[in-house]
Length: 130
Image 1 (cartoon, rainbow, N blue to C red):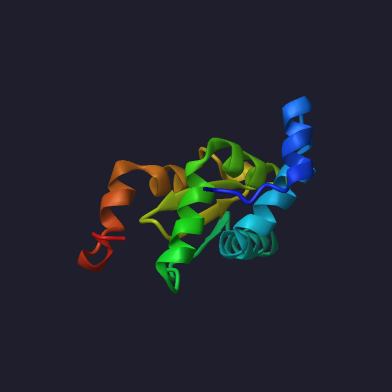
Image 2: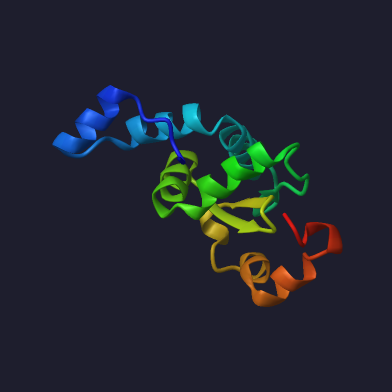
């Protein structure tokens, strides 16, 4: 299961729409490792002089890796996080998360990061089973 949905939020969703804030809070509580990592990368992207910031440190365990995969594999979760943090998230190798400023999307560094070549160049034998 991707998210631990409180009963009240599930009932609200059954009756109609939920707000982005309610959804993102559910993600924050359910996937704390993913939330913290994405929060940190997004903050560095906004504070820095570069167009993006990324994480290259593998998660400490498979549980944390699972959180990151669930967060970024879901269109709804990824979209909610992008709207909340005001960045475009990109993902490689089940742990390399990058946060791009909106102005950098479709720029040269963004295109390189999301390209097949970029994916291939970011491979290593120890990541084959991640």
